[in-house]
Image 1 (cartoon, helix red, strand yellow):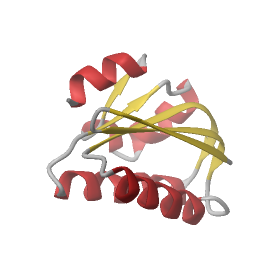
Image 2 (tube, one colour; image 1 turned 90 degrees about the vertical axis):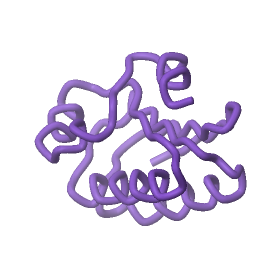
Image 3 (cartoon, one colour; image 1 turned 60 degrees about the vertical axis):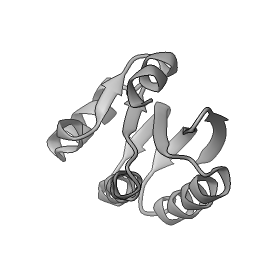
Image 4 (cartoon, one colour; image 1 turned 45 degrees about the horizontal axis):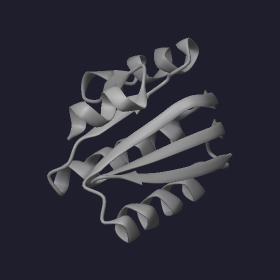
Length: 112
């Protein structure tokens, strides 16, 4: 798994490449938590365009970051989800609480 972060206004954009699973979930959690704190980000946008696989551990860390952002009064969005990953997010109920957008610019407008 590779992560790339970018701060735009008060939003942190996290681009994930690879798998978000049991082997990578803890690393993802630690890196995103540090980035949120360091950047003083209020909102979080997860770009999942290059995520090929996600399991329950990946779902758990996404939900954990959602709770963290909501507790500080922010919003979270997901961008660029592949159909099979979107289906997993849907079955887990994440799409009922986090909106999905096709483009990062769209998500930035909505979360801010």
